[in-house]
Image (cartoon, rainbow, N blue to C red; front, side, top):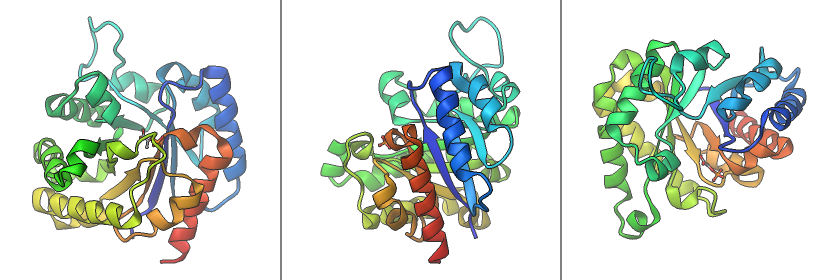
Length: 258
Ligand code: PEP
């Protein structure tokens, strides 16, 4: 049985003071609860130490939104996976569509970053998903296959336990438009089959595949109730503690129904 994960990607929101307050509010709302999954927040770099103070200990885990593909040295503006581990991160997001779009990152970058993260003991949430134009052309299955095939064969089956996938249709990110539970399930099932083909069967059965794209308290339970949807990567709704915890409640409700 896979544990769900609800991960908040704060993007470039929440400086240290606001971030500490938000994390403390989430932590307080989750305090004392026996959760059936992992709850994670990924603040901007400058906010990580402040949130680490609040998130130290269960249930809230700490992650970063990206990392360098280099170990250290003359890489102005970059942050290494080792530094993230040192400030308390256990997780890092790689391959977010905003990195693909604005930083023009691709498969080579992702493989290098994932490898660096694993070397430093971090676990990785790897994001992928099709654009609106691609869905309109019915190309979503091909796009997702290419994105996963560009990265997964270059990892080892042993890496699978440190990896979570996040299917994020780009047309649903920050748009208020959500994939239907059926659309999400179809893409997640296809992704899991690809993981089986590339990394092996037990790895595929154990791999958590999150959905991301305008997930909110009102749709979380239904989305996460799909067989192959193991939680959510949450952007906008992770910036309000009630909404974020409401999504955790949705994940718990979906778990209770299985
Ligand atoms: C995201 O950017 O990963 C995301 C899912 O954003 P939102 O929840 O705002 O659509």
